[in-house]
Image (cartoon, rainbow, N blue to C red; front, top):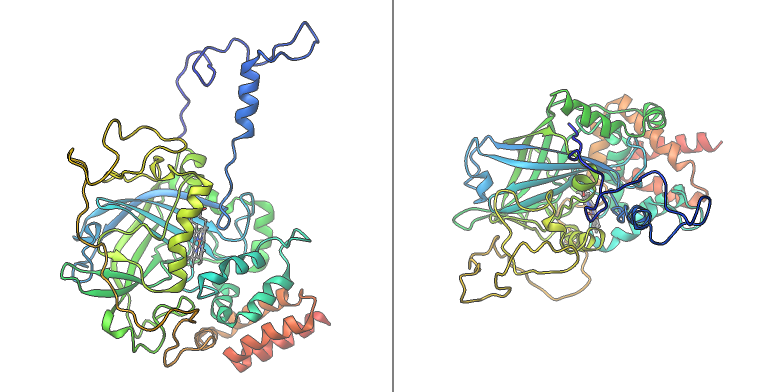
Length: 487
Ligand code: HEM
């Protein structure tokens, strides 16, 4: 629970006692304020600088600390030390979020939820920066800024515009799978506790022998899946914009610690080239029948942050924070993300962001030669700041964190490779056909309600056509529902 700073005299930022914190200093009674009132100036100036840029996406979020416990032997597939024995525990910090809304937006909205986990391992921090959806809207990082522009506020109206959203999705048919997911029942989770998490991308695991496996992570909620209908969400967002954040904090305060069962799907490296779907395409899942999920651990959240700004707003998660035995795949989205996050952190929190208490390694220490910059805390003392050196400084390990993969061909703006059963619609159609009749009805109603707001008929029709290509019945019903709403 929250504590006061120590009792004693109130002071300035420099520690000098404050005599009067109610009245600023003036030239005579009723006269103008004096520049020598440095307390007033310090307070006003500090206040003006209390905000840092909010995250350009996922600005709205809540976090908590907890533990990850290994429940299965995964050493045949990865040499990551924090995964090296059944019962082994690692401290974690998890930040949940929505994507499109600004910092003060409501929680109960139709939007993917971020599911970003920081494992404080003995080999450095490992960040898995995922979502509550196993797939994503696009498959190439070069489209991400355009995509997000359509989700955020229009430059002229200042609001999210149905025209922009459906124009982009209609012209980006690879989004059909994720959009079907988002407008289905799981599109508005009832809380952060009642949803699954996914690493979404494919990652590389490599074992002691140097063998390579491709893996996908799943976090299955132990609280059970609970969702809101559009009508329930509209009401809740108005009544309690902080619903998800409050629910998480209060559950932990009550001692009801939310947990997730962690699973992985594992593909031996040699199967990737001939798998029926491109295993590095983020718009596709690996059907469980092909690669059954294997349970490997338990994640529990059991401690609230004390100071939301310090620990949640300033927390940083980077898909490039790997540890030995875990690495990237050639997924073009993931490759773009390996750059984007560190860059965002340097802009948003600063060059020393990695060394703030929530971000720094906790089970080991950072021994880099990065020095100085804004807000440097002098942690290196007088140690030499270069490598190699003859003064006993830290040295490279000569062992790559992950394995090399072979490449071929010529450079170029190549689209992601297409495998035997790949197209932009097959898995969206499969997802639609898996739904019960009631689920299909809600999906159609949710989509139609939004598409009907589009001002130009050809944009609406192009969007509907993508769903028709996923499943004839899907497109037909959606078209009818949109026409009915348009009147
Ligand atoms: C190429 C595509 C993407 C780019 C360029 C991108 C970029 C970003 C940026 C710049 C941030 C803000 C980081 C910060 O200020 O701390 C962010 C946050 C986030 N992104 Fe992405 N993103 C991409 C795709 C994805 C995907 C596919 C997922 C999930 C599978 C995802 C999950 C998240 C999450 C969970 C956060 C919030 C992290 C936190 O809680 O601090 N992003 N993204």
